[in-house]
Amino acid sequence: MWFFNFCKSSIGRKFFMALSGLLLLAFLAVHAFGNAAIYAGSKYFQFYADFLHNFPVLVLLASVGLGSVLVLHIVLGLSLFLEKRQRTGRYEVYARLTENTFASRTMGYTGLFILLFLIIHVTTFVFAPGSDTPISVVVMERFSSFFFSLFYLVSFIALGVHLNHGFFSMMQTFGFNHPRYDKTISVLTVAVPVAFLVIFGGIPLYFMSGAGASFMHH
Image 1 (tube, one colour):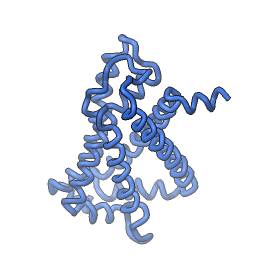
Image 2 (cartoon, one colour):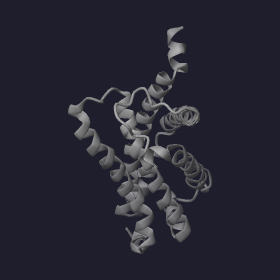
Image 3 (cartoon, one colour):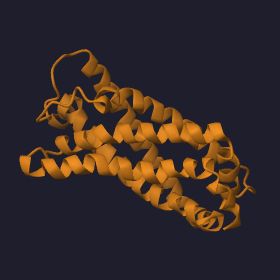
Image 4 (cartoon, one colour):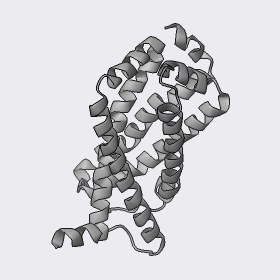
């Protein structure tokens, strides 16, 4: 009974929100590592994609698990966002004020924008391509569009803003709010989003700048 009461409480929802965020962050790290192959050229990126397709069962299980974690994160996020707007108090787990930062004020909005991006991303690169169309070709075709690349760039900026507050909030929820950790957390709160922004955001810039014109030749 205590577990269900904990899950329904604000603290419990924040804990599972942070836990799901940590799992999604781990996925982003792996995904970023794989997508970085784009900078090496189509041959290397296609090799990465084909390698994943050699393990369809594992990919399916990982996709279902990831989707479940994402849904949980979204539901909890919306619940906490709406609850926050209905009250004037502070988060119980925060040790210092963070309500006035741009990232904290826009968490709900950047989250919804990222959800829109994910829907477009999945329909574009997972369900849309034909079975006989190499993913490297699809990447080249899609990112050849300036506005498609621009949308991706804006989406990754939104992701960076979301992670900026999300990472800090996650650390606070897990109890890393001692003064001895403040400097490290402050650095990571900036470094983690910037790292993802450089890797992911660099992809549309790679094509928008014209450097991606050689993508299919490597």
